[in-house]
Image (cartoon, rainbow, N blue to C red; front, top):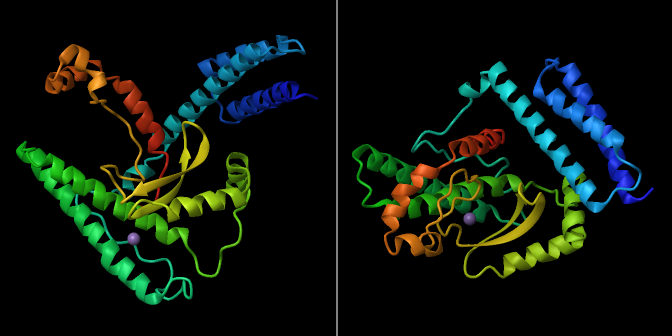
Length: 297
Ligand code: MN
């Protein structure tokens, strides 16, 4: 069997599973998901043995579209069914706390000494938490007074201390006493498929860490867009971003985005831009983003 017929075979199986899924959840027979799935079934049943690349791509696109709609459908239903979310802990402005270490200060010895861990967690991480709270509270004050004269300063503080707090929170949990070994399961599969092997991944990650310019981090990330892993270097840890957050609404203020029309008047470009914001898109991104829940600190 070649890889094309393999794929069509997978689509058949997937189609059957989707139908079963809709049936067990008692989705109304007239719901548009059923209609789409029916059309899709007809389509794959009518396809001949040999498919061109374009036909396959088109099939794949249709399958992905249905998949996305189904996910959105079930996500929305969950929200309606359970109000559990509302009572879940969220962090108000200035409400961040220092997470406890998930192990003793000396637990990572001999690799990392107790002295380092104490200082690193109780002094350095705590300072990030306090700095982040201060930045959030000052930005709240700025909103309340409609005075944004210090927006650059507090945005920088928000990024610096926010990234510091979020990355350290990940860092402590990324480590565990007396473990090491090799990654397993889906993580191992993704590493192998993107980096070639665990060895190659490890070499690149180590070199990225060793060669960070000045101070900073090596960071393994998942890209929901590319659907693959990647290794990034972060110099210091911000350059005005907060790691561990998901962009929802972005505004390009590079000159190429407005100069031809607005010349140096960035302000009126920004003011006018609000007329073309697609809030449905922003809401959709948020709906998907809130599905991802880390413990709140
Ligand atoms: Mn640190």
